[in-house]
Amino acid sequence: LAGAVGLQRSAALRWAPPLSPAVASVAVCRRPGGLNSYVGELEPCFFGVRTYYKYARPPSPNLDNLRRVLTERLTPVHFFLRNNQIFTNFVYDMHFTGIICSPKFEGKTYKEMMQMVEACCEEVGMKGRVRMVCQPPSRWHLLKRRARHRWNFDM
Image (tube, rainbow, N blue to C red; front, side, top):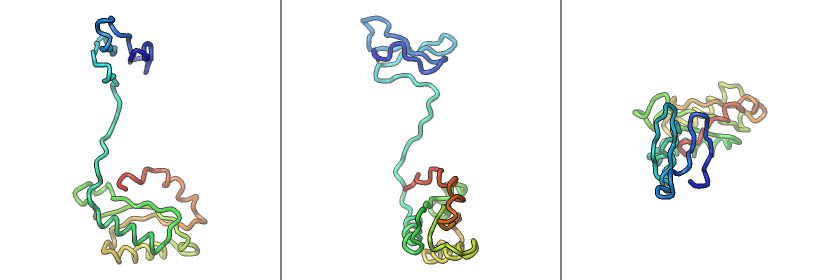
């Protein structure tokens, strides 16, 4: 922390130099309102930092089977499928949402595209549980904004 002397994170949060040579391993993190917090050198004080824990993905055979069948049958150019978070974790691995861009959708109406996806879902036993946004590669511009989301949380 000796190299971080004078380093400012924001106007309200400021690193202070060590107190004395006797307590060189202690850093002072000054908070607004005059409150001081003493922490060890290996534990810098960051207040207001949001973090999340990354847990191992639980077993999801339906999701894996759906991904496999849709990839084999429709040969997509761009494809993401994940658990539908609207239904919470009580029905995990039962309802899905995703996007797919496949050359096999060229010249088809949206209804025909959804029938192709539902035929694949029926093969796995998940008919009526998949919500997909389908487009051919010629209409990729309609999927571009949806593809920016972080789809790969549970891969």
